[in-house]
Length: 309
Image (cartoon, rainbow, N blue to C red):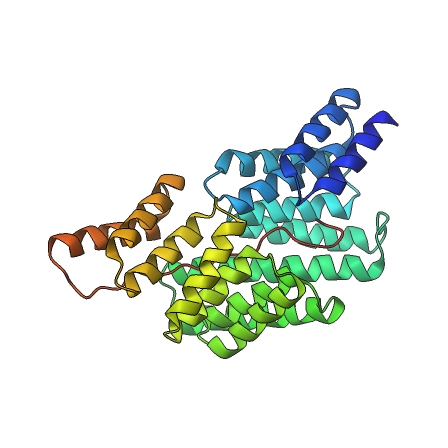
């Protein structure tokens, strides 16, 4: 009972204080080493931390280990396999992520594991859309022809539409759909989705950062700067937002500030190639000015809402 109480406290802190949630789950595991729920909740907390700071690879790896441990100890829980799908998606292991999602969907048909049918259906469609979107973004980044990845974006939007019919106020899902439209260069619908996400969750830093990208495409640099500054105030650990704000500063002619922001992004995440490229572009401009604009990046979904959170 004491372990269950600690897990309940950790669950209540997810998204608000994930470090404390990890600590509470560790205490619960010490009391009940076979508690699949404790490992499941700790995996969610680890993943939340990683999604706010993509340089924290060890947190992502801990999330994967805990999700696998939870599913091993409770192989009939759709929620455990849904979490495995989420952490594998974060590691770009999309094929495995789709397989675990299929397992979660099959298990949910026989046992909802304490959740409502409506919430379960939303969680599964939301994760399917996330997988489709992130896999397509990687495909596009790897140079796939437009005719290939564009149809994948259509699939992602169709799936996210299904999720939003079940839960119209899901801010992260709206943000994801906005990202899909942005990748398809439909900036009007992208902005509409980012604005709707912020209407339901004004502190969604990814939606703020993404909205700034649309402002930049429209040459609304002051609005873009304000939106990105707000995103960084909410999540100072975001290397992507530092990179994107550097792009805006460069557009505004403030090259020294832009260089500092790109350098900060690289310092935060040494594997962040876009920020490193932008930093090198700025260094070359200082040596011999050339009209090469640095490129923004699109933050992908944050911690999900609903029963799988």
